[in-house]
Every structure is written in structure tokens, then in C-alpha cells.
Length: 292
Ligand code: BG6
Image (cartoon, rainbow, N blue to C red):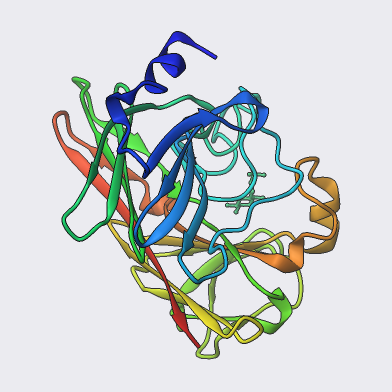
């Protein structure tokens, strides 16, 4: 634990009874939030939201039991923050997948409780990133990129949300009707989704470009819908590793794939963002649960 971790354990950011900084898994510092609307847990490592649970609901986010919690490793599940590249690095095969933001300790720079009870935490990763996590009945995640440099800044980014589902094969996703996707699994580009809701019968890894649509996960097993609204995002990724890929991932349980689904709020490939010096871009995902 660093001096900084020790410092945030003091009362400076402590909304008494609501925020509790503490050593978490792998001795990584996390902040637990016991709010009037929901409970949450956020690790400084990656500014990683690992739990969001509105009162009276099941957890909304999936977390792998096999996740590693260690410096230099991503946390598996919850909401990895992806920046400045999505997937493999375009030119450097030795660079980590999905960028460096999820591997880095962020600074907690502000906390507040709004008059409506929503608890807000703001994390910063200099020189470019600020991340606001607002915990109410809904979870509102806002990643701001501010180009503090003297030259244009081009990047990809994602709020790589893992959702907990009762059984992936019984779930459907709506919102991406008629959108077009690239899929590494089938080796296709520009494929039309068609008009039917998405069903899951095999490994799924699709990058939908040029869509700002709200997506809804329909989960009949738990009789709920998870609604994912977004702003400042032109791409959506839908991912489930299925059997073989789950087995191949060291930090993911072999039998966990039926219990999760990623619907990711993204700007990637042709939707990468370019910011002039001094400009700011905000990527926002708003997540809520509704009865089915
Ligand atoms: C998804 C990608 O966003 O993340 C998948 O589309 C990838 O291709 C998945 O497998 C998980 O990536 P990682 O680096 O966390 O194992």
C-alpha cells in the first residue's frame, strides 16, 4: 500500500457511514459505498467498479470468482475502463490488450452526496482522464478525456460493462436492430443485425459501429431488464466468451460464461475520437434495472 492509499484512508473523502476506503482483494485499495439507493465498490486500480447493487436487487454487474487482483493485471468483471486503445494495440503486439487505464491506479479526487441522495466519486488519471461514478438507483459512469497536450489526441475508449444474467441462453438484447457489426468469431465485417432481438447460442464478439442506441438485456430468469443508455459513444460491443474461450482465460471460471454478458459503451476503430488541444470529450453509460 502506498502513501497515497494510506492518505485516502483518512477522513478527507469519508462521507461517514456512506464511504469507506479499505484494503480489498489482493490488498488493492477500494472504496465501498453504502448509499441510500444502492451499494457499490470501486477499486482505485483501474477506477474499477466491481459492485453495483440497488437495494432490493441482485447485483447488476458480473464479477468473476477467478479474477486476479494485482498490480499490472486487469480485474475480470465489473466495469474495466478502456483507454487509449480498444482490443490489441494496433502496431505493438507486446502492449497490453485494451490499453493501460485499467492497469493503472487512479486518484480519488472528490466525493459528494447530492441532495437526491446520489453518491458521486470522481477519479483522475493524469494527464488526460477524469471519471465520475454516480451511484443512485441507476449507475451513471462518465469518462472525460481532456486533451491537455499541444497536439491532437486520437484514442479509442470503452466502459466495458460486464452484466450479471441468470442464464445467457435465455436472455435477449434489443436496441441494435438493423445496426451493422464486425465479428472476429465469424470473420465478417459490416454484417446487418437484422430486425430480431439478439439471442446467444455460441461465442459472440461483435463490434457494432455507428450506433448510439440504448440497449436492453431481457432476463426472464430473474424477471428483470437491464437498460444501458449512452452518450458520446458511437460503437457498442456485445461479448460472451462461451465454452472454449472461457476455458482459455486464466482469470475466468470455466463455468462462469452462462452468468455474464458484456454490453460495452465504446468508441473504436472508425469511431475513434480525435481531440484538438484543449478539447474535452465525455463518454457516458447510464445503467438501470427494471422489472421485466
Ligand atoms: C471484448 C473484446 O471487448 O473484451 C473481446 O471484444 C475480448 O475480443 C474481451 O476477448 C475481453 O478482453 P480481455 O483483454 O479483458 O481478456
